[in-house]
Amino acid sequence: MLQILYLAQDLADPAVRRRILTLVAGGANVTLAGFRRDANSLAAMPGMEPVELGITADGRFAQRIGAVAAACLSLKSKLANVGKPDLIIARNLEMLAVAKRAVTIFGGQVPIVYECLDIHRLLLRKDVVGRALRATEARLGRDARWLITSSPAFIEHYFRPLSGVDAPALLLENKVLEIDGPADRIADSAQCPVPGPPWKIGWFGALRCAKSLALLSEFSRRMEGRFEIVLRGRPAHSEFEDFDAFVRNEPFVSFEGAYRNPEDLADIYGDVHFTWAIDFFEEGQNSAWLLPNRLYEGCRYGRVPIAMKGTETARFLSVRGIGMVLEEVTAESLATLIGSMTPDRYIEAANGVAQCNPGTWVFDRTDCEALVRSLAALAVETPQTIPTPAVPEPRHNEGGLL
Image 1 (cartoon, rainbow, N blue to C red):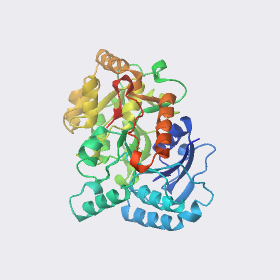
Image 2 (cartoon, one colour):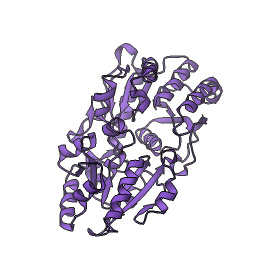
Image 3 (cartoon, helix red, strand yellow):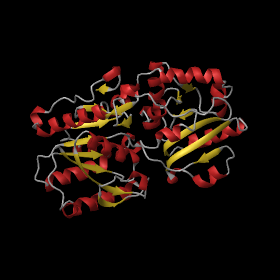
Image 4 (spheres, rainbow, N blue to C red):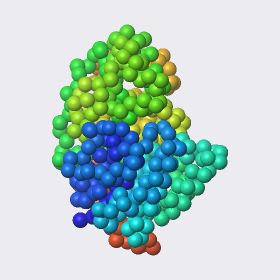
């Protein structure tokens, strides 16, 4: 059985939990280690006690550097009860530093896979700070066997032209994890509210975009209750002046708390008509390049996605002829796009999503097993004979490797 040490930047991140579930479903034995940012019982893995390396704070990059340095100094004792793994997966740049130290502790010759699903804005700066961080990434990633990322735009706009990491890239989209059956047997769907007012827009997941919140709030007020905004997930409170007070004072916006992914997806998407697949958090950079979790989640359950013009998400939807694209970042533009929505128009848009092959949205047990097989093959190769990533195979003409 493949033994994986998974190093996570945030043990409370639901996406980390989903990746661990993926690897375990594929047949790997996983040890999870990483930093704690906040409490999130819904991200816990039953039967798995993670190795905590320290505490970090969201949005405080300097503090995170100090925490990583401290963790590297104490790592030998922290991993004293962990056997030598066949492979280490480092999620995000700071965990690459920890992975390098772990390889030394385990005696070398442990392959590292660099998993990077967001490009931090500091890495894109053109000044000395950006150059120093990219140089650090290149140095730490020099020995990485593979790079795992979730959007082809990350490779096109960052890893090829700017990053010094030249490891073969494996594209693993943020698909919905469903390990109880193959994607082509999906027949169930969340029960959709009756098409018609109040129309509900769901914004789920990592809530970190103050611009989206302001736009949706203004739009819902303009629509005078014909549209409601439902928020669920983990708000990044550091990005909002006062998230709780703002939502409390908005008559048509509600925050319904965190949820388990993937267990609660059918319930939460069953409460809305549209998926807000827009993020201005790092506008023109990471936010323009990513393919967010909620894009796949909402479409998996037949909800109509709303994307922003000029983004990778909009391109993704255009290729498939589905969804709705916002032309300008204004409440007026959003009102023009969906303000006069009718049941017939909505049903037509939802049917377009439903006609897509389920494999577009879902990562099933077969995919999990293929991923772990490829990781196992990587673990036994020498640096001179690194295999080209070959998982998941581009089933249904979706996904693939770059």
